[in-house]
Image (cartoon, rainbow, N blue to C red; front, side, top):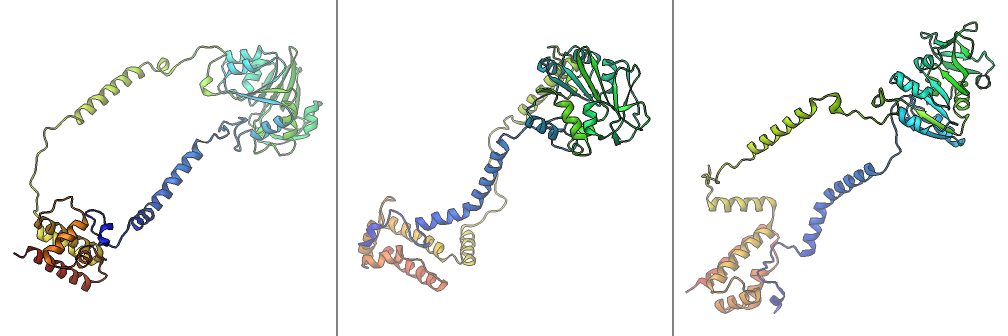
Length: 396
């Protein structure tokens, strides 16, 4: 009979198959899988290596308006090797004796660091580093610190300055000893200028009073690019030194000062916090004793639960699920009545019921394992038919 194809204890009443259930699960899982794919894609993008950038003013890896990435990239295209360092020790180590060492700012430089730079044989270019320039060249002093940023003509014989013609800069330096060449004065008859260059112990020392001509925002204004590229591109190797706060006071030594050296109470306070955390974990995670069974505040009778479940089926118009529940209950009770084991398969149950009731096996199979009803009337007829079948089996 066709009942032999039915699996053991399978009550086919909700109108679903393995394929349809798999399709429903797939449809429910698609939004979550899409979200998971987006999360994994975002994580992959975040883990991909990105070109290093910073926000330090005048840094060659800063693409912002205050950075100097544009000038560094143009120099590299012209064959200049740009080496970015942030410590005096690295700057001294990178200097070859035939290179240009650019120092951007002197706010974090100490006297010891300036002395280490003075001992180099390489050409020095100081940008916005008036204090360091005064230390390296005592005859040069700051002049026109309060001058606003304006366009200035070269007004000197320096070939780099004359090639630039005009730059936009603020501030300036004045040479008191007359050994240096001063260019780009604030006024035509002014004694100070924004650009100073001099020969010192066989090397060239150049200073620019303002960082603005070197920045990405102003490199393409007037003659800023011409002056910057000529001054920084004199050698094939450029050491681009941007002093950092972490290098404050270091002058190329190997000594390192840790946080615990600067703040000695960090270590004992950290150990005390770890102890407090461990005590809190033990306190909150302690065992509270055996599990206590508490009476439920409300006892729901089985009949009420059954009626409530029926109302839910009716509201959802789940005729197939309701029919499957009715058929499963009838099959279990009939099997128990006939003395069949719980492992009895569907054909065995159908044959036993057919012998007990005198009905044909096909009728019993259709009633217990048939297609689900599609409306309330069909569900009511199925319930009545199952009730009659069960009463026939229970008949003395």
